[in-house]
Image (cartoon, rainbow, N blue to C red; front, side, top):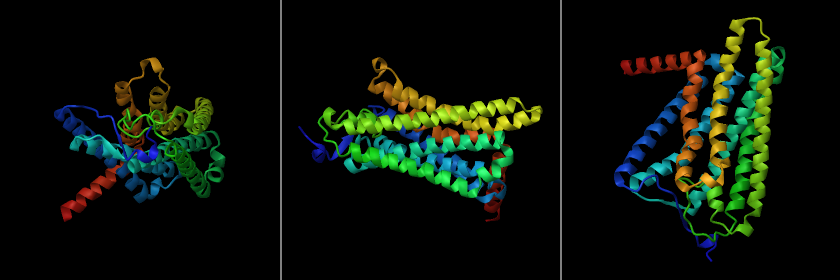
Length: 313
């Protein structure tokens, strides 16, 4: 049986077999990728350039935009290249890099969303202590913890997976190197270490999910006790974009990983996987800018300034 040392490349699952559909998928992915780059790039630039947005909430949003760019850049460019050049191959090192960076960015993003829930909880439920609990130093420490935990989790999974012998060929039933599909290629008795690592990650993710839910229960209680309708609306407006992003990310990931085996198939996995790996990074800028007038105003000012600069040139 072949082992990991004899596997030089993996074969990813193609979205289409005909050349016309491959080119159509390339054009669609290119449009989504450019939209994600533009949306997240505008958010990064607006927050960096506008001093009014130099607050903890926007600091965490800046981190979220960076992670969105990293997450979508890990999977989509390779999928576009394969569709354009009519190939399925990805090198052994490239596959390992995809696993490392996708787990890193995805896990860090989930941690940042958890931190953002804490930020909203303190801002609404303990406004008098907001400056001391969510100061600049605390923000930097929480962001570093989120990025660090994502990196350690990614290194753990990558090291475990790519130390396993692969006995089931090299065809990955997914459009990128995803952990469950890579594990299917390994020897079952040798994958116990990675199974325990996955169990640990699931418990960690569940803990973050419970923290977010408990935070929002407290937030909604505090908001409903506000005497002013205007105050309630303002509080909800700062929470709804974050809640929408968490709901989108968690629901699509849960459907992808927790769907019953009876309905699981390569075709369904190929349709579901973009819902959590591609759609959230592209949709997050739109979700946040729709409900946030400060961010919209800053982006509009930035675009007008850019337009004026081009006219003068």
